[in-house]
Length: 323
Image 1 (cartoon, one colour):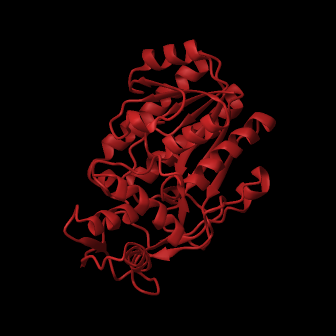
Image 2 (tube, helix red, strand yellow):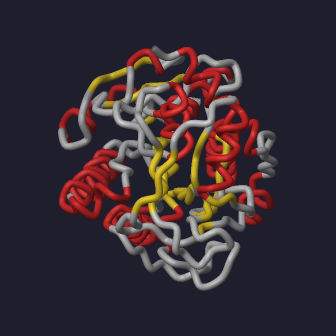
């Protein structure tokens, strides 16, 4: 199969490209390398480009003629989205429209979309299934809701086939140690904690200790990046087989608080790194836990890395390799 992967040099995208490559698929990665890395693209070819360049995107699709597109390229930091909303609407919505235009112009109609649990905002019930109301509380989540609506409208109008995967908190690194998270500025909790353990940062801040949770800190459903990569491959197979548009959650169905993650990171690293409590960050819901029943039922997804210690251990092995 020929697969066009936007943002395939980034954290999640590179793990999906790795899995696609190991299965023998023909891959073209399209990435502006603003947060991704050329060395992370282990299979296929890399075309450096930006989705804002509509002509370049169309020409790339027209030349490669993929069977499907997997779209990761986006801005993803919740706190930044509150400070810089236009950046998120421009990059996540307008640039996605550029991609969709180019796909229609080149008769490419199968699409896997990288969405997020941030679409749910503060959910009324837990765990969250796909029928829960979409009430995002930050521009990042709102930008993803907008694109999901575009996809719902596009599907019947143009016989456009898509699966949107709503990720919960992605963490960990490739089990073989070849790739992992490598953002210039670490914002994800597990990576940040491990970098504090390494001494790259002086202390780890816990943002908010007065949430309505058992220990007062936010609870998140942490899913290993390799399990998420597998979900993409299975969603792609499902789409190729059925052509049915759908939206599915991807998480483990249980969560850990910030304090629990910090203690686990200290145990795995053997380092009692400094931690300081700080006020809440804007845009953070108290808890997000996935109901991934649909993903399992329709694709056969069965996670193989559902263990917080294992997730942190793979991330720690990766971090120790980085200078």
